[in-house]
Picture 1: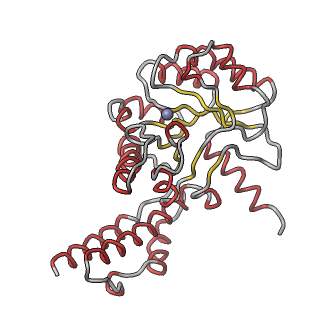
Picture 2: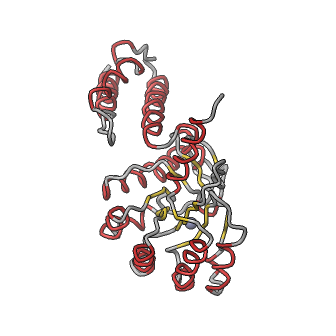
Length: 289
Ligand SMILES: [Zn+2]
């Protein structure tokens, strides 16, 4: 019975914890929403076995996670894989994305360029790397860029559910603790899917963010090659993959101004991944059925 009451307390805590203030939304609507949609602890028909308790808790956590994700991402993208975001309007907007940081040298240089060029980007950070760079994390946030989750250890091999939870949940928790930002964007390290990690991310309502343009900058080609790969076949909604960490990124830093300037000359602007998704969601909502 002690375990049962401990669980009831935990559930109450979880339900209390979901009353997060969301930007722009009046706080008063938050509690009724959950009163209607979430089972109250008293109504829960909890199985007394340990497994039953875990299953019940897990489904409640899932419901909470889905609700949270829906407040952050347009619901049409929750749990979905995205390679690019096709915009019916043809609005000329692309997303620059950087993986494996933040790096004290290269991420700073990239932020300087983005600031100078007035462009926004999305940074898929590694938890254990980000942990050591709190100031850099805060700078990324303060300058209007966006975070995505790239696991805690850049894990590519299979992860069981407990390991996947640590890799993903701890990384997003760290991002939130350092910057106050909540992310529901997941980019699989090495682009590796079906290894348990993407299932965890999908289950929590993350979008699985891949890319339309892989610069393969981690192989350290010439800057001019990175530029060519980034700007080839420019189309609205493209997602360009680069790296700000994980090795020598001088060529990426050297390529970035030209990538931005070339695309800008073609009429493009630079949005975060979530801004692309929001544009798409607005188009979809506005479409007659
Ligand atoms: Zn990576």
